[in-house]
Image 1 (tube, rainbow, N blue to C red):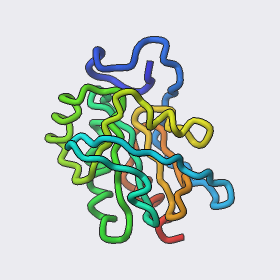
Image 2: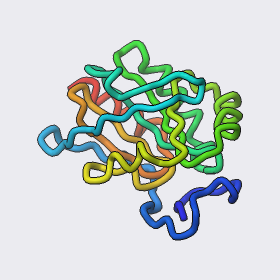
Image 3: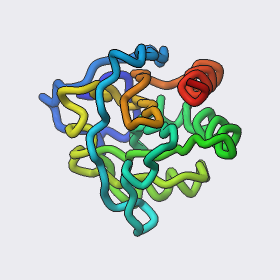
Image 4: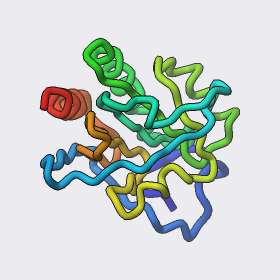
Length: 175
């Protein structure tokens, strides 16, 4: 089971799904020479469009993996929304990845939170799997920061805190 999440049990991944671990939300920033390229990801968005990491080339991108059934995801949503709004005009873009969720539940979550950024609808979990062999998300919620060169610059497993996220985003953006 996904560790660190609470909520509607019927929407959670099946028992035996052991790819995930608990996280404490601390942001780990990687030195530039240690960064691995982010995989090419794309897919349908909750609002019926499409989104891809390639569409944000040359920008710092914050990827947040979440699900409506995840209590820590609900708790961190206002933090993500606030940091996204604060950094939007400085070349930072946010992209949510709704993971192993029912679309109706995810849409209800987004209507409530009004994050202001797009969310890939990744019911099968293919986006998270694309990161295997690099720096996998490994918990729900997880947040990855992709630098302007398309490399994974930072990762947090678990719900992020405002100051930790803002500091990491600012550091990567200002490199």
